[in-house]
Amino acid sequence: MNDQHVPVLLERVVELIGVGVQAARDNGHSPIVVDGTLGMGGHSEAILTAFPDVHLIGVDRDTQAIDIAAKRLAPFSDRIDIVHAVDDEIPEILDDLGVDHISAVLLDLGVSSLQLDEDERGFSYSREAPLDMRMDRTQPLTAAEVLATYPEAELRRILREYGEEKMAGRIAKIIVTDRETAPWETSQQLAAMLGRVLPQTKKKSHPAKRTFQALRIEVNDELGVLRTALPEALKALHIGGVAVIESYQSLEDTIVKKIFRSATTTSAPPDMPVVPEELQPWLSEIIRGAELADSDEADRNPRAKSVRLRAVQKIREKQS
Image 1 (cartoon, rainbow, N blue to C red):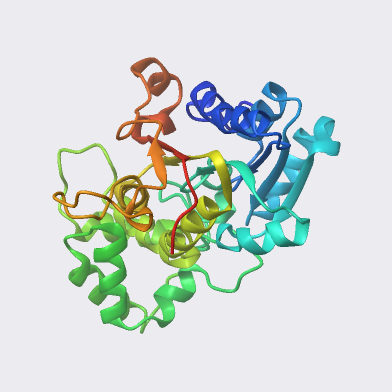
Image 2 (cartoon, rainbow, N blue to C red):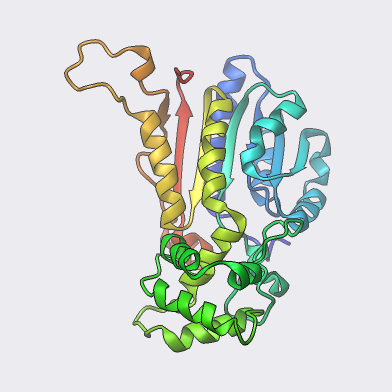
C-alpha cells in the first residue's frame, strides 16, 4: 500500500493543517479536519498521527480507495468518519454528521496513483484497458460513452477546454467518423489513433496525454465539482481554520487561485477611505502564491513534479 502511493508534500501539508488545528484549540473547539480526497489514506494517516485530538472526516468518490483507506486507518476508527461521496456534497456530509464548523480541509486534486496503476480503470494511455475513467464506478458515464454519443462540436469543446488540445477539431472529427464503423472501446485503440494523427513534439509526454486528461475531467466533472466544493468548504471553516489545496494541472490550479484571490483581496476602490466590512478580505494567504516540491521529492515521487500547493486561513466570516 505504501509503495503504491506516496503522498505529495506530506510533511508540509501536515504542518499547514496544524495551523487550523491549533486555532481550534486556542478557541476551545474540538479540531475537525476534512480530507476531501481521502484516496488510500496517506495524508489522513499522517494527520491523525500528528494530532491525537483531531477527528477526521474522509471523503472519496472511489469505493476501491475507500476500502483501502478504511483498513489503513483502522487504528484510528474512533476518530474518523469515512464517507462515499463527491466533494461538492461537503455541506450535506457535515449536516448529516452534525458538524457546524471544521478546522481544516485538504483537497489533493486530480487522478490518484491507485486509479492510474489499476489497468482496468482505463486512466492510462500506456496500457491496454477499457475506456472507463470513472473515479466512482457506481456512476453510469464512462469515457467510452462520451466518445460514442457526444456530438462532434461537444467533443471539440471538451478537448480544447479540458485538454488544451490545439488539434481538438481534427481529433473530434476522426472520433465521430471512425465510430460509425467501430466503437471506441480501449485506451490503446484511442492512444494509437492520437499517436498517428498528432504531430510529434520534442516534449517527452505522449501526444495522447491531453485527450485523456480532457475525457477524465468530463467523465468525473472534476472542474465543476471543484468550483462548487471549494467555496462550500471555505464557508464551513471556523475562524482560524485553513484550506490546503494541491493541484497538478493548470486548469484546476487556476480555479483555486481565482477563488482564493477573490477572498484574500478587497474589492473596494483604492481611494475609499473606509472599507466596509462586506468588501474586506475574509481569507488570508498562508502561502504567498504557490509552493512547489523540491527537486529531491520530485526525483523520489514523479507525481510531485507538477504539484502547486496553496493554503489560506479564514480570518473572518464572509459577508453576503
